[in-house]
Image (cartoon, rainbow over all chains, first blue to last red; front, side):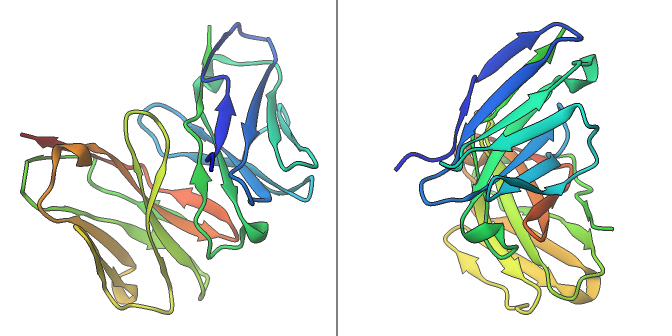
Length: 115
Length: 112
């Protein structure tokens, strides 16, 4: 059983460009969350998708947007990239609507570098 | 607002020593869930343990144990007889409706 898979693993973009990151959740999971982890810090919650809708959102600007597909996979889009967007982006999946008593399973992340 | 504090930035031990990681949390919720995750150099966060606010019983699972005290809002985690493979960053997290609030993490370095 495959766990959470993310693509690509590494990405280098130029300031001002747009980027799309992809995530396939663990089999049987219907909720996907995205986190940004800057170097030396803990992951910061970006948003969560359930039933193809954004259910919760953290303190991130509108440049960060997402989508969830009928097969529960998800994309994270970031527009007008800034140098400060350089980070490890982690996708997490949860079963049963992601209620707070369930642990989340994380992918290995996408390392985004903005130059 | 939810907050998780891990005051220890790095702990270095020699193999077979015990390691205790501190975690202090803040929440106004009466029902909440606390987690510990491990992040090896590969980057993937690995789930270790979960505790809900109703159950203060401290448990042991293999080489892992935890001490949950609501009175002091602490959720400490201990690795007994550490091994080199335990070297990683450990995160304490508080779940807020499925949204995780992580601490800054504690780097554990276990040397042979």
